[in-house]
Length: 393
Image 1 (tube, rainbow, N blue to C red):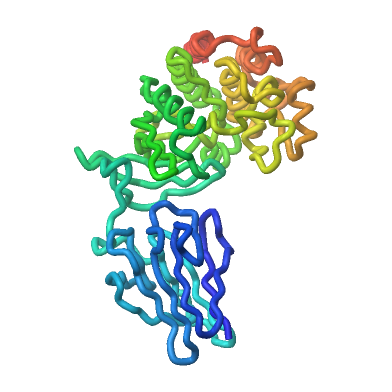
Image 2 (cartoon, rainbow, N blue to C red):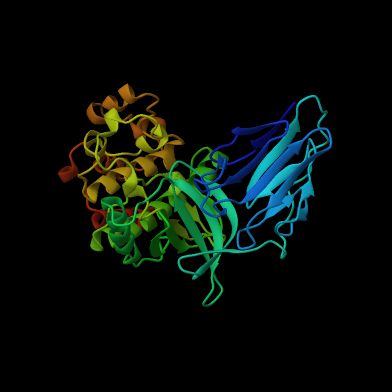
């Protein structure tokens, strides 16, 4: 007889850990655990599992200093055995594992429990921030809601994927780029508060922005009205201009990285993290990278990702504005081969897709999408032209 614990959501959704009858196994994020999870908020040996059918199947929280273990709604006391059954959900921090036992019918799955004050907190950055809950995950890493303990200010904490060895070139570059991103001063940029590398993990601590993204808005409406698109693009250009003055290239501007606050403000996010995409090779030779991001990527960045200038971000702004107005990006690469079209082929005619658009707006988008960086406006020049178009629209 076998028991199985299966991750129900997150990066490793669908991954299972199997115990045979009589097994005792440990699970955690360290090499000393039998089952290893890539989650720095777990203890190295977070919990123990003992499977002795048909008499018992128990889980034990092994670390009183960790983010805790729950079975369904119940928070476990450290080192206190708790019986589990098929259909239960064991929560290691914020990772849910569904329990199944060979030959045993599953009970109705319990609903996800609300956060509870009994759950032990996790702190990072030498205790400066407390992690509250996971907000989401993507190709770059996982994002958690947290608070700065010195003043209780809400923050977002992005955990970047992969280990960062202290003293390595990656460690040095991450801290340097995080410090640069923290220098960007603009109300239109999600502020990077600090970059932290500890225990071979890299975190970006950022201003927490509540709201949705431009991608969400376009999906809802199909495309945006001219005045709305112009305002969003102008404010993004303001943010890019501030970034260029600070010596920072975003490299991953797209509608999904532009946030709309409940008050209607536009904020460009993911500064400080985007540069880790393809430091050493061209996008044409990458495997597993998100082609969705490459739909907005400048030709020179696709050909040689390591060396790009601020006008690559202006291209991405042009591709984003094209998407806002047309309901789709200028290019839709589905394979690496399709990326050659981004480098060589002109974009579709925005005037044909939206004949009612002002000619000056169509020209500006075409200029921002120029294949040669030197033929594009700077972010500051784009902002001025967008502001002029808003005045007459």
